[in-house]
Length: 154
Image 1 (tube, rainbow, N blue to C red):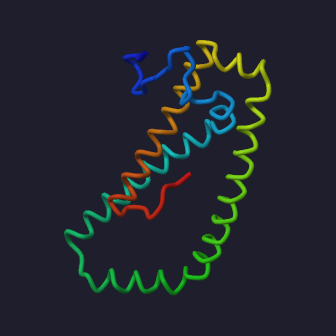
Image 2 (image 1 turned 30 degrees about the vertical axis):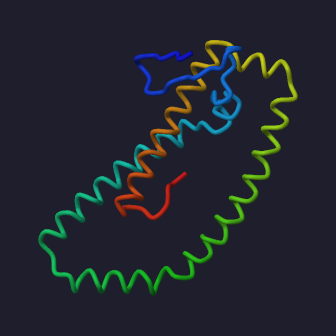
């Protein structure tokens, strides 16, 4: 059974019991939603667009020797910082995996929370928040695919 809302780009799939095993958890969506973070992402994408437009103009009119010089300078000044960031991100990934797995388990242990998550308003909001996250991920994935960024931003 499929429920669709023409104002949203998400499709909700339910099983025969009306329970959606892939339904976004409102607890996780609210815990991960950040108005400031979303606004920051919008600003980041606008900044990336501006930088790509500048790069586009530069590529059409500049000398490649200037680019080579800038790249070499970047490598010289950022190598150590990038290595530290990589180490920190790997540690954060491991810690996030551990905590999120435990949270998923704990979330299923509370019947009141389980019932709340099935109410229409909560389901609708969870879907909207998940759609915001998915759109940001799609933009980040596209930017990685185009070589604009090297990994999706959080």
